[in-house]
Amino acid sequence: MSAHVARSAKPLRLSQILFSQGFGTRRLCEGLIYNGLVRVAGELVEDPDAEFLPTGLVFEVDGKTWPFYDKALVMLHKPAGYECSQKPKHHPSVMSLLPPQLRERGVQPIGRLDEDTTGLLLLTDDGTLIHQLTSPKHHVPKIYEARCKHALTPAMVQQLLDGVELHEPEAKFSRPGEITQALAAEAVDETLLRLTLSEGKYHQVKRMVAAVGNRVEALHRPQFGALALPADLPVGEWRWVASPAEVWGQ
Image (cartoon, rainbow, N blue to C red):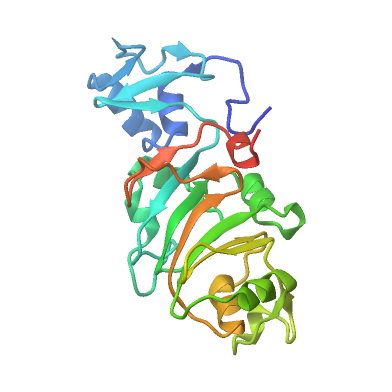
């Protein structure tokens, strides 16, 4: 069974359901119910001890619809100017773009995008899923679109496919002489490069492009695994991912 779906088929108290979904302390959750702010299947429920099966449950809190997920998995259309950190140093955190319920649950980015990189960012409170999707052993492909400063040449694209040596002063992030290659690379137009990578090294796309004598001017990630950024998801907005199977293409 997917960790994204409720593991227990047993009914849970409504206050317990709200607590598990990040609506605050148990006392706060009881208060939401007592104050008539919670509906289940469209019906007002004012008893915190009322029991419901969590699997597939959809409820409303203060007029907003919430689906029950044992583990949260969401996608965010990350804008530029945000850090993928809960303790940002120079820019706001991407966490500030999420509702407090998800922050209360402790969702974390699955991998990171640089502050100036835009595109698809996944976040979850499932530690096992984070490991599965970031571990080099699983080779989960990520697609990036890099707008380069100089015109791309067939030789540059071939170098990226063959493998390039990363030269950067941040020695703690890579071994000297480390060779990295793209799973796929193509010049979409004169300066737009589409790269598919399965690793997640520090500033990897920028360093690879620099290694072939070019420079990334803007970077966007439209796809993580089999999951593509929806065209109708505005920049800075988030959306539930129904199941991790979507990332695996299942």
